[in-house]
Length: 208
Ligand SMILES: [Zn+2]
Ligand SMILES: [Zn+2]
Image (tube, rainbow, N blue to C red; front, side):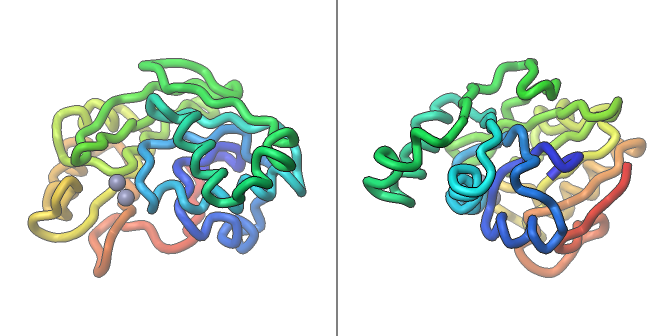
């Protein structure tokens, strides 16, 4: 979550974590989705339920192509026939396929296609209050990742584990990435167990 109004992916358990941090889920104006793997999307159905029944402010999803179809399918799997009949008419949503650069809900962004298994991942550079936050989602440590983080104030990048991690970035590669971009503050997430220097802690809040 960035600046209380931007959400980067939506893994579970999203809604309880927001409440624990004292964040209002209704304040989120735009969700940037890197890809559709479950660990990045399955916190969204309860979040959307909140937006349908508790706080009906409009919401924008920016994601890879197919974002509307994929998410509508997810809502239908989650809520069955009631989704289309009762909930969808009350949901003020806009789905946007990410462009190389654009603006969504008044947030300026650039997107960079990253390597991640067969699905790939859309990395984002988000411009907030004069700063740039780069967010990778899942990625391999290939050239597009350097393009994504280059010159960013903060980079939230995955570092899955030590050694050979299929379709992800290893801790060794994460250390090298950090060395190549000494002026960027790295926050490593998606750590499957153990830890690496710069790893985020659960529910960590940082000021930039
Ligand atoms: Zn993934
Ligand atoms: Zn993942």
